[in-house]
Length: 487
Image (cartoon, rainbow, N blue to C red; front, side):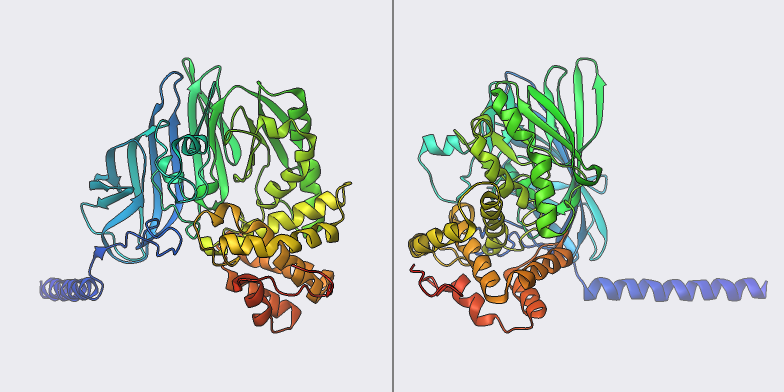
């Protein structure tokens, strides 16, 4: 009896200590609202604080004849502070329900922000899930990809929803994937994805990543795709339509599955079939295997009003008009390079977009020169002569004046920066820089300073002034090794 009393007292004492410790921890880290901005300079309204998104599970239910789709997304995240509330970027048609860890949560929509207040605070360091039932409306493309007001006809042409006669595709770059599913829509918070597209049985659903399953229920089919590497939201593709499927095998047995609209001419299929060949060239050039579990090409009936290509993870997207032009093979090299730089290695901030676009343009021109196109040095010299005008229009390469520059302004300046670095340190050292940078940052976002640090470490040189002049100056520096070139 005495032992029982002593034991009970000890347990009571321990409980009191634990309770006091919990109270102390809660006092030391009180729950507070997460920030409703990631602090991005070019798109200050986007992004959210207080958590790190790890995975999204997205479902869209496509039905012909209507622009609305029943939809749901589950975001799995880890709290980086104790949260009394938190935000997601959202420009979807309607939010119906929100649950946090399976319990209904309060929510309010403020402009393009969904603010969620869970029934209980989410503690710092704790994983949590948010499930959102909503309506996606393909008639609603509220924001231009440049962040600037556009004429109505142009805004419609480049809307996030690219509606086609037999379905749709998504153009989420750079800042509009949150019109497709609520998310932390900034490049510095990459995640993995499961994408579920439900369609009539005679319509195919297509998504970024690897096809991992198809499930039929009556006259409806759900196609499930998986992106297995942390990737930025804006390069996630979901589509539906009538497609010709092209199955191939790439290097090392890599599955290559392409989808080309049945409305395309046969030449489009011929271009799509070049995908394994270009991947093999990139693997040889970069010395690294293709970073995703599968590859492919998506050719849709209409994209951006014409012959346009679009970087989307593990499956670049093209309009049929683009694929029908054999010269677009070099553009495919550009988009597939993004699978390494921009997708597998996301940029940390939009100001770092040159790391994505510069690399894609550099290797596109290199591929073109090795396959019957203009010599690589000649293309660089021609671009060098134009670069001051580009800088005048858009601002420095790594600090664009306008948000529009994220899409259009860093290709040439980024490519010339890499070309100048290669000229300065030599091709062999440059290749080691590229491989080291990719190895160290695949699967996590990289900033400009990360690339500079790798380049300095691998080359053994102080490159601070070099990169400052090429990335932050308003005029084009002298090109190493080419004193006769004139900007």
